[in-house]
Every structure is written in C-alpha cells, then in structure tokens.
Length: 311
Image (tube, rainbow, N blue to C red; front, side, top):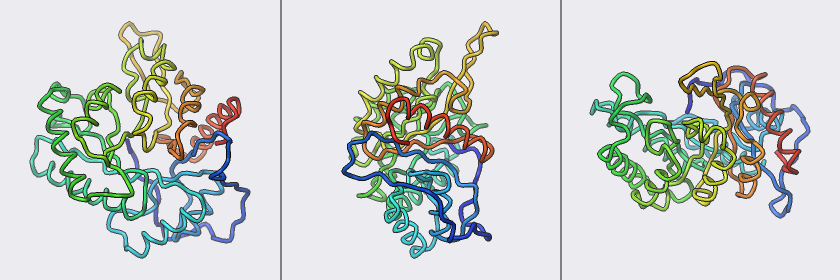
C-alpha cells in the first residue's frame, strides 16, 4: 500500500543520453527470473529519461510513470517505451476507501478506482490495485470490527464488480492488496473473493507480509508462501517486496514491517515460487530513500543468485 508520493513527471530530467549496463530477459530463455522494481527517485520529463533511470537501477518492472488524467499521447509514449525496453508496468495505485461509511467518500473512491483502472488499461499495466477499504470512520485503511463481516464481504463484491464492469478491461486487471484486518486477509478469503466477484479481470495482488498475522504463520512463513502460490498463483498480477519481524521482548505478539533482508520472510521460497510465474513483477515499497531501496534490491538479488534466479 502506498504511503508516500514519489516523483513521476518533474521539471528537471536526468538526461536521456546516459548509457548504463542493462540486459533484458529473452522471452525464449530457460533461465528462471524475477522482474524487480521500485520507485524512481530520479526526476524525469519524458519516456527516455524514465527508461534511463530504470536501467540505472537495473529494474525490469516499474510503477506506473504517469498520473490519472495524463494526456493520451503521453500515456501511449510511456506504454511504447516500456514495451520497447522490456519493462513491465506493474500497477496503477488507486488507494482509496470504497467501503467508507461516508457515502460521498465512498462514491469518490469508486470513481478514483474506475479512472485508475482506465489508466492501467491504456498503459497496459499488469493491474490496478487498491485495498478493499475499511469501515473505520477515522482511518481509511485501519482496523474495525465490521471489516471482516459477511455484510462487508458482500459490499466488496458488489463494489469490485461495479468498478470492473464500468471499464471492461481487456489488457489489465483490477486487484485488491491483502490487509491483516480487511478482506482479503488470507489466501482462503482471496479465493472466496475471486469466486464471488466472478469477473475474469479480477486478479490477485500478492503482498505476503500483510497476511503474516500470527506467530504461527511467522515461524512457518515458507510453508505459508508455498501454499499461497499453490492456491493463488495463476491469478497473481503483481507482488510487493517487504519483510517482517516479531518482537522477542514482548508478551503480546508484535509484528513489524521492515526492509527486505532485515526480517524473517523466507525470500528463498518467495523468489523460487515467483520465478515459476511469467513476468509477474516484485515491487519494493515503503522505504524512504534511494539508498534504502538499493540495499533492499541488493539483498533480493543476492538471494536470487543463491537460487539461480536472474533479478
């Protein structure tokens, strides 16, 4: 889930003439690979500068480089640049509360999702992603006793159908990021949503850290990851890369998010399972600086090398 805004189209570019080492993955290659991506901190004004920044970072996946409302010509230019340079645009974020108790906020959130899904369709992103939202009147993504009820489940189904049916996408998917206290909070409940929503363009956004909600799952998260991929693998459109710790000096379980490599998520299992899917991005998030992202990428790539996976 997005927590801060990064530069997309800025007034000062990095220079399109920069030449950096970069290799693409052959579509016919037998080599296992994972497409890693993350935010771009370098400023860019056009697709060439955007591609140069991605190559500098050795990313083969990217967040959507333009905002909702961008000019159609601009959208097509970035779409072509991604295609020509073997970059998968992973997702368009539509972060909003579509199950809000405030009807005005709810309608605005649904409209934002529709417009974001339209952008994802235009730019050929793998998915448009939101969370299902919350019945919490104070915090749009917070816990609430009514979030995990059948009434809210039914509202999510109705709302998601409405968003997808308003766009009828053919090149992208609408997906919901799991949350610990909102549907889909588990692989079982994600399967329930897939069946209930019953739309071929509803996909899975896989963020395993958000589903590690107990010490039992934490300590056996490798098994949990394998089960998730077994159940949801064919439907996964994009993944988030984070990590998680469990405090040992506290009598009540306290699970905290951290950067990849600083926690106990089984990245060996995560990358091996993900490499079996074709062109599904792994997108880093929630870090604060370019250096933090570089360190996280180094860790993920080191685990990839241990498993003969190109990242």
